[in-house]
Length: 111
Image (cartoon, rainbow, N blue to C red; front, top):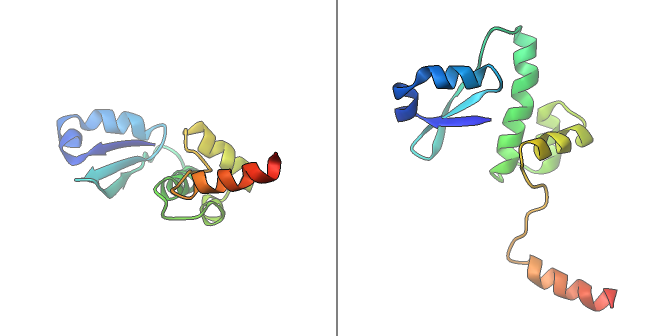
């Protein structure tokens, strides 16, 4: 998914429109999502089919939704949604502050 801010959209709207032919374009106002630009040369059902996985991937990437919930919103099965995330470069497993402690705990069991 391509993202642009309002200033860049004003400077070069045709760039955003070109990107919208491939996938929805997220328009940011400051650092917050403000609008979504969707190309309408396809049927509405085709647009919805492409929009749901893009929206679900964005919500999952930003940590606003679990993998299971995002998969349901996407309309894809779990395997297809995971492949979709991979194609976008979105990691499924994210390390956090507990990861180091968990791996230390596991190393005792694995040795």
